[in-house]
Image (tube, rainbow, N blue to C red):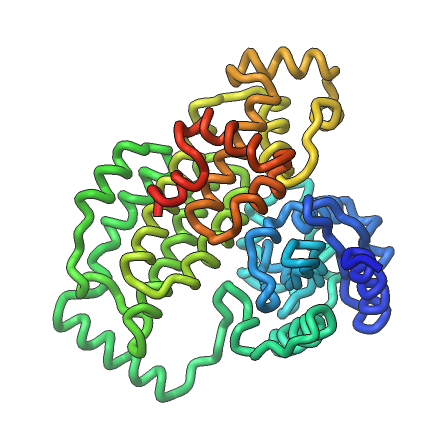
Length: 409
């Protein structure tokens, strides 16, 4: 019995036992099996949920522990399964919610949805299971053990995103004392204008100004709010996670597709958490800035028709899977020949060349930010063999993958 089939069987049993939605995802991001309440399927917004689940970049995350994430306040967790150190499939549990859909927090979410989707989203949320954060963590640890036969400590499987913890009286007193000290010193986050300038550049895709900004932005340590007294590294990570969230939102406002931006944000936060030096943390943030500003710049430079924007988005979501002209034509309701001609006219590349370029861009990110073997990266991105991948990579970058990884780190 192969590992993917084992996940399918286990997923069915798991759904029957816990009543939460369960998805089994192939390594290429296709849904292998889905176990959910039938009432969800009548809601038009459920198709968006399925796309989000299928499109998440599971391959970028380690298999050492469960990973929790949220989308529009809907929560999920997943466990990657390996077969001979290769990703064999992913078991995803969710969506579920930690709080009832009421109040301003939910209103903030629906304001980003098209008018037609708001009611559908709220109706769906009413049907989605409500469980506590602790139970979701406990379930993820149990499922991880069932898949890997290893225990994982609870402290490593909390969600990547911030969890709200009630403040204690002592913490309030400490906060008030800190505010008083900062007022005396005139330090109340005086870098706000600095932050606004940076986000303005990201929102408008101004790469050269971001380059100047990064070069000239040498700020004294005391100008930044310290988010953790226990560890300078932890404090820096906390600040950078906040920064990534702000940059991600600015990029979305600049035109980058929301799911693309959020997936990229999750990826960089995961990379950030693995760094143990201030220099490495700073390097990640520089990559975040340039990556997001380049994506905004590309969107603004393109001004593509709706059909080409749809095609580009589908290509971005399926870099790890099969991408065919016929599939793109189906999404755009154009004939394959017409779509191919229109794509070349607007983008300046054939669809095949564009896909190849985007896969090389993804490979560059993996080479720079992870330690995955080059052969694995080539296979994940659908290159037939490593030698072919090396030739294509060198054609686009001017150097071999191994040389690129060495130079960019």
